[in-house]
Length: 159
Image (cartoon, rainbow, N blue to C red; front, side, top):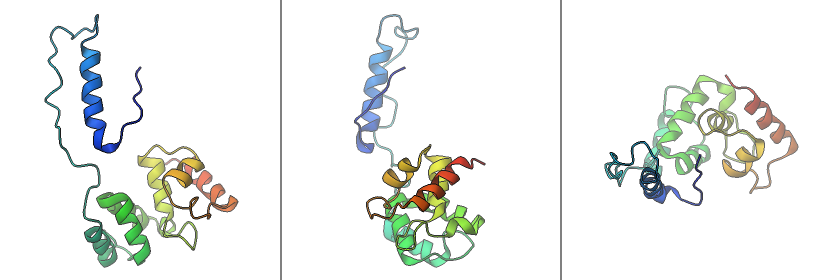
């Protein structure tokens, strides 16, 4: 097993290509003689969710991204700037389950669908992972014990 750390989204392809080429060249690799360098991987590919945040926020405000209730302007803007076009997946979750459309804290734009999305699609396993790295709640000083308990409960509810 090999772990690579320290790369950013903008360099992950280069790091991955370099590591795979070095691994393929190691003695004893079953494909070392037959394998060409991994140059066929795309050098440029849009990042997941890349989209104009203004356009995404506008669509979320107009129709919620899917049939269902419209969301508040600050939540739409927050989702658009943090998730890009992936915001529509979160909006869909909120539309399918109205409890997920509720704000995590009344003074912040985050909604419970973001916690469910982090659990189901981003491999979040701890409340700290969600509150510190996937929301702005900790940095805003809003990650109360009650909110932490709610996040932990949702992380434990794997459908």
